[in-house]
Figure 1 (tube, each protein chain N blue to C red):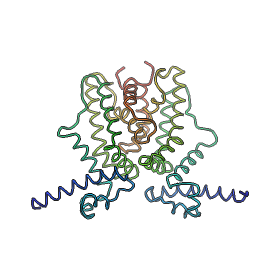
Figure 2: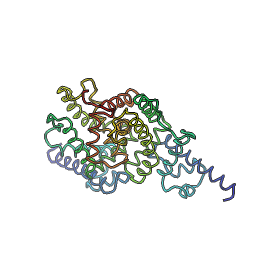
Figure 3: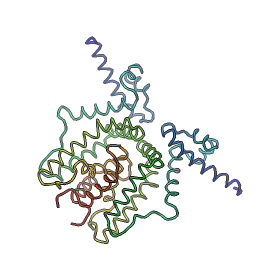
Figure 4: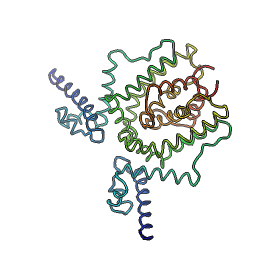
Length: 197
Length: 197
């Protein structure tokens, strides 16, 4: 493409992603349509269908893009201050804040709901969002194992889920309030276990 | 109502619940409509709207009814053999089997997806399905605390989620395979904790 056409194409691409995020927040996922995204972005429907097969695919790209812009240049790494419990409390509290913030809550919830009934979107969501996030915990837990702060014989990929699973389930199913105190309790129980010491 | 009218009404009610479960399995939740449920049950749409405000409300009643019929007369209680780890493995393995069986998986997944974007359905789902299930674990964990097999100072309602949260999240988000071995690993890590002993 000529430079002008490339720039126009990039502008349309970005306008579509922004329109998808705005609309899911304004009207909700059940009423999000390709038509409405096209109208908001000022492009034709065919422009969207040339790049994405469905509204869920647009929203997934928009959500990944949102995360990448929030992270900035550096790939996010869970801090290692030497205090494993403090570091895990910090990252889980930040996750709670993120899940409760409208900018993330609405598109994230929409994608999770779509993924529950749509295995292809679920697989993309896992590959691009959930598994990279799990791997950041795995790295931190491996460092803790090397430092002797975590049992050496356990699988860190499963250990991650002992902390992220309760947070995710409470958020998705809305069983009980999602708070920093809850995140702290989950980290404490996971590290020390439920059995008497 | 006259006895005949009452019997007819009960028959229609049951036919509607069965039609909802059959159709969600056959066509999926996105294509489940009140029209299709009415046609399958052999009733008019207005009969359904007289009793339920939405397709999600019909499906929730059908799902609760399915669980009650499976449980039979006796309310389900988690066994207490004195071996806490074995009892928890048993109930979590049974949960895995239930989540993976088509009779439960499809309507349960549809209700979870609806609840994620629909707080009213989420609240009903929590009240009628998820919280009664959590309370069965709480009872078993309280017995373990009395028997000195579980730390006395921890909140059993949060401790439950250390085991059910990872199972629920893996199932809903389809991150990694949901297996008996995974259930066993989660119970072991939750009881003994992640820290070195």
